[in-house]
Amino acid sequence: EQLVESGGGLVQAGGSLRLSCAASGFGIDSWAIGWFRQAPGKRREGVACTSDRDGRTYYADSVKGRFTVSRDNAKNTVYVQMNSLNPKGTAVYYCGRDYSHDGCPYLQANSFQRWGPGTQATVSS
Image 1 (cartoon, one colour):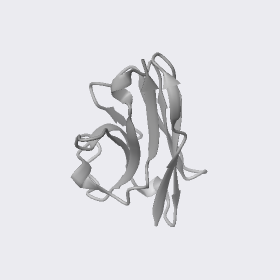
Image 2: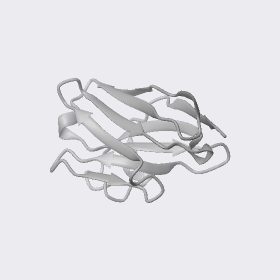
Image 3: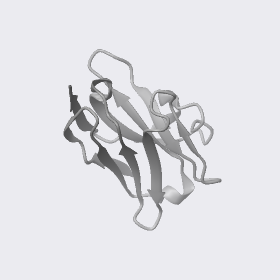
Image 4: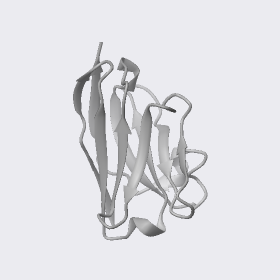
């Protein structure tokens, strides 16, 4: 069971990136999947989460209105569309599975597991 992130890259401030989180070994239809990011020297912080129960999505205040998380259960993949990026968005982005089945609204990293290797997003000013 694993998750693998992709889609990172270098983008100018104001630009967009779309990250993908591909699952294997399990079906995401039974799990909430969250996106997190970690900048150098900082803690891993929650960005967005998509619930498996009711289709609800949750966002950190810092990305509301700019990021959109979505899932395609048929492709077993979760996405995050990131618009209006700024240099504060420079980080390694990870996706994880909510093993607590109650962590999605709170975006707490310790409720998630099966982290992928991450994908680097760099936003230049």
